[in-house]
Amino acid sequence: MSVSQKGALLSWVEQVEGRATLKFSERTATGWAPAQAAASGTDWFVNWADVPSVIRLADGSLAAHWLQKSGAETYAYDVRLSYSKDAGKTWSPSFTPHHDGTKTEHGFASLFQMPGAGGLGLVWLDGRNMKPGHGEHGEGDMSLRFASYGRDWKQAAEAAVDLKVCECCPTSIAVTADGPVAVYRDRADGEIRDIHIARLTDGKWSAPAAVAKEDWKFPACPVNGPSISARGRNVAVAWFQAKDGQPKAFVAFSSDAGRSFGKPIRLDAEGTLGRVDVELLADGSAAAAYIDLNANRAELRVRHLTPSGAASAPVTIANLANNRSSGYPRMALAGDELVFAWVDRATGGSAIRTASARLPAAAR
Image 1 (cartoon, rainbow, N blue to C red):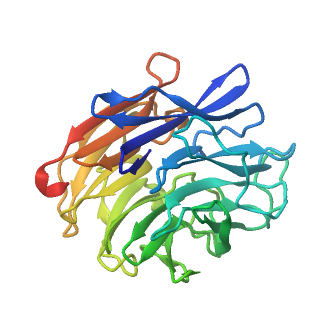
Image 2: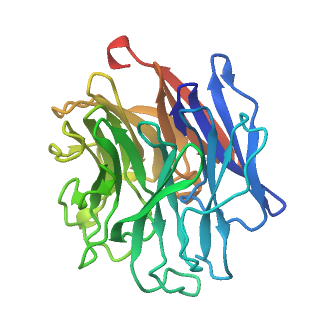
């Protein structure tokens, strides 16, 4: 789910008889508009955590991404991009932001509007330095990479952000007054998998730094990425970790565009599946969503937190499946409305549900 000047935009994948279709809908004053299709294919990589997206850019054009198989190996697939200049009626031929030509994993992309007069920007996990692993992630290092396009859709940049990151945790990016900031799960020597941040300033990425130095040692990817939100130079980051075998979720605030962060604030009470989301509010506080887990009961919850550490009681949005089939719930702030979306498995099938809440004037 993303937000533009028109409001919230929700995208999802539908699968029918082996064909996957990326669909989207924009929220209006009377509800969700009729769904439109952005792309479809029979050779897509469809995954519960590595999901396609559609966003609306500042010039009104739409950009979409999905994952398309490039070889026989399980994790051989590319990020494919396409754009529409006529409100989604027609779409350009697809293309890739990466040009390494390897039949390895390219995914977990986060698309965003480049600041100023720019067009599309994105970061993604890139496995060009990894070896295929017969159905599993192979040897070598996963990297985080960046690309951007001008409004003419000519590629303007491609660069490495971090050359060794966690293999399959979703990424997140936001734009501050100082430029874009990306958060992701790092992978340091000794299998330390803390959340890191990197900042794009004057066309160059800063050296990555830990949002909070937790030294969480974990032998594999937890498939549980962070979320970031920004307003001006204020930033909020939410994330999951399970140090000492205890699953927990946290939020930390920054007032200097992500150069430093305050003390992490515990988001859950007794246990969580993570899969967090965060939205920074106008007064500097934040709404943070997460999947609470208590006695095998999973609930999508949201809390209001302030940089001082104050936190509201949690509000339950929906009951969820307590496994991967519940996917990654989404939350977005559009005007004075906080919108939630999640996968509902209650009837044995799969449906997208949404809910919304109006915020008080001071928090918008």
